[in-house]
Length: 508
Figure (cartoon, rainbow, N blue to C red):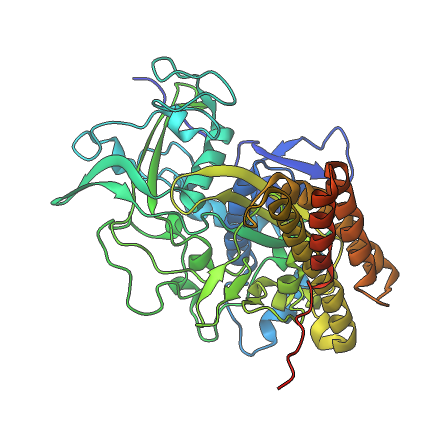
């Protein structure tokens, strides 16, 4: 009988990192244990793609809370914050790190026969799942079934194995960002189904504070647990004594009692990876539904919730062509005049207690069901997240700068659409002129915003954006003036940059 394949995430070197100081004893990859032990020496994680890093952060936050004891709220309101601050002063205790990973034995092994990490071993039973999905279905960017080839030639009849670390990244993306709709058939009890709800982060954009080291980053990413919550009531899936019941309905109240269960809850999919003989590669996978009931929102602490006029919170979606500075209304809780008010990610409510951090945006532009479009990753300069509370006047000025950048972007888009419509005798609609104008304006607006922010220059905040919008409008439209009619159309549309033609007031 051959040796059981293994890939222990705690011991194997698989997480790509960038060290603060490079050297011969600084490997480009580390395992989970070494990541925590050397977190004070590692500058950043370089895990890709962006949604996999977003998912990784959530797992690491949950582990960090348990290793440091910050899963316990403490005796009084400031106790948790004080204890977190103390962990910045020294490396994590290697014995505490070892104790955590030893407590759960082989549960951090991707291919443990009884509890493979974040997987359901029951799927290997033909009576449960009669057919696997294939490794091409698992891997990000590969065509599967009858789908078209975009990034590489892969055939289901002869699929190329996937490196175990890459397969784990894909597994994370499936759990957090997986599609809804058709999936592999699964039978549990007397229920046989082949459909699944979308993952809890699907189409969303996450924001994570990043410091000078991974130690700072992971401590900043923690949120305080509720008062009087016992750590034993706030467990991650791999810490539970048994496998979950896929037919169990979510509790009517408090389905996620604390931050650790919120970080690792809400998954709808179930997966099982099949290794080769060495455990270094994955050669097949099952992908199916993991819960029959749609899970309630985790109220994720890392997304901007947009509160509608009806009071409903929705995560701000990931958009690959939207620059990160445009989300500062939510990150800094800036004053806005929008109908939809943004609510800052909860994680930033206590960040300034530790220092000044950058904000990393990570996400996946997708539709709500099955279509995947583009990964999203961006980072801000260091920000003061309490600017609204500490200096309301500066917050108002930053808010004005942000608002005028958005205002003239919208006006430019409509002006370009109106110019096209007047020139072609149609109604304003999406057109090439508007797309070209947006592509030219938003990078300029971003540079204007950060230049003014760095210089703390908030005088006449509207003027540079109007100037940029006007220049772009000229650039997009002037070459299309063919006759007096098109010239009049363009000049008439130009008024939209200033708010449009004012309607004359009729005297009574």
